[in-house]
Image 1 (cartoon, rainbow, N blue to C red):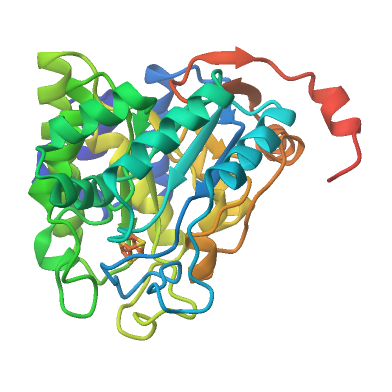
Image 2 (image 1 turned 180 degrees about the vertical axis):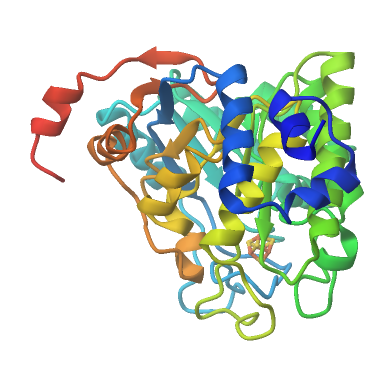
Length: 372
Ligand code: SF4
């Protein structure tokens, strides 16, 4: 059997075979990834989520060279929002039918652990139906340092206070040689810690996603090595309790106006699409793959729906992180997402963050509305 037929059949691939995939003509690779996507998810539909990004604070002590979001406490535009301001943002999301917030900040050494617990309790009490998916392994590691608790200890307390999920921010490239390179993020959480914290969250029943960023100058072998860590972790989670990663989300490094600009090659649309297809074929134990319209633009994200993706991401009302490193698009509306999905040839369905379909939008009525 040729490699492309084996890949299209959905059979498990070795790392060496996955590296070989990058050498295939792009559209052969796409056809294989699309064949697998069609067997694992509803081929006719593409899902989306109405959500809001909320950044509670931009103060961070880690200092990644690719990050345009963080500030030191003394900078004029450093902020930590009050609970009231954060609650107002959630109320605005509720007003447009949103179902979850993705709430993240930096590793802010000036906030106590109780501040986070009280924040979760405050938001849950005010907005009981909105899911709070918050923080990242890097922030959890910061809280472990603050409290002396283990990852499970921190997460248990956050969950009891109202946390519903731990998004996979900071996954980037799960190869320490890349993540800890001097010109990238030497102080960043290491691969083992990142995976261990995500595993602890999964054991507690929290929702999690896996992320990957390409364009640091990593080799194809390193990309596959990063995916292999995720595939192994997913095998383990599914075998031991069944609560694995809900989705895999990849994008390209954004370098506009950040310190890393000019020091790494970045990655363009061809590499992005190639990597999306390889990930769909190699990560055979993941169901949902999300296209990244904020970093790639709508047209490339639409194309990714034919390279293995089955989800168009979310409205991301108020995205502040990748947009500050040059991502092309910021928040969008449900109408716009639906328009993009229909234009790409699929039926849009609104999902919750667990990938359950919660509504089938009236496309005609939605598109008849004036653009926001
Ligand atoms: S990417 Fe995250 S951890 Fe790194 S500097 Fe930015 S906010 Fe801090």
